[in-house]
Image (cartoon, rainbow, N blue to C red; front, side, top):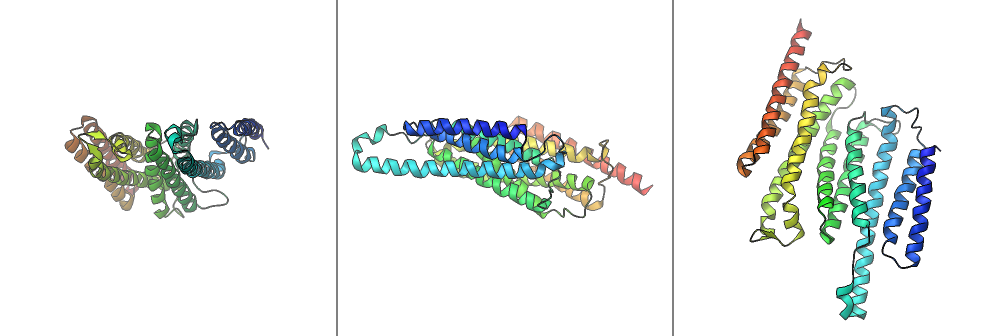
Length: 337
């Protein structure tokens, strides 16, 4: 057990004591304290068992994957528990003291903010995981990608379920983000991870992420049109109506992330530490397809919504495509000579 593990377990013990005292005093803050006790306890157990001082980035894949799944399950469990317990309590008060039902609050103090913070941490952790070699000693890359994708989707759905009870902008954005990244991560399971070399595997991963995020952009575009019926003279009156206003921002965020992946894929062979060329006809073809899919989507959105920033992003994506072709063709010609 490392010092990090002992520190996190100590924080878990303090949060547990606070939660028990709050529960004994019938405080609605007890659930939030118990949530953090579970999070600190799981984190202490996972990271305390990992040798962080001697670990290379690839050695962190296993602990980080377990941590993402564990925190996602804890979040899902607490969100489900809040819904079940508070609905049961509301029905009981409705039958016994119906005149006081308006005074009942179904919100556990601090739970929404805690779920927002933990969801953001999970989203950052998934992106960090995607930047590493996904393979670890107990799972293949395909299995790790499957675990990350399913965990992100389940956690995103749980956060959006909490949004249906109480509207929170942060929860909605992070829930939609986790769903989008989860679907893109699931697409990584179709890649032929082995025996392709590492320098060829990362550009293929970037390309798959571009396609996956662009597919999710189309899903949110479709829902943006469908949820128009949830507006009353332009004013949202349901959770879906409120979420509709967040979809354009989510789409722009996904486009920016896709452009980052496109830039990494385009300049990959010229990086100093990369020895591979990534210039086969198949890889060039798939890279062009990924870029064109993103560019056409952004152009369509810019024209439909008359949104100038999306047009700028389409221009940046076009420059990335040009850089991709120039670098790959120059590398390809070097190989031929």
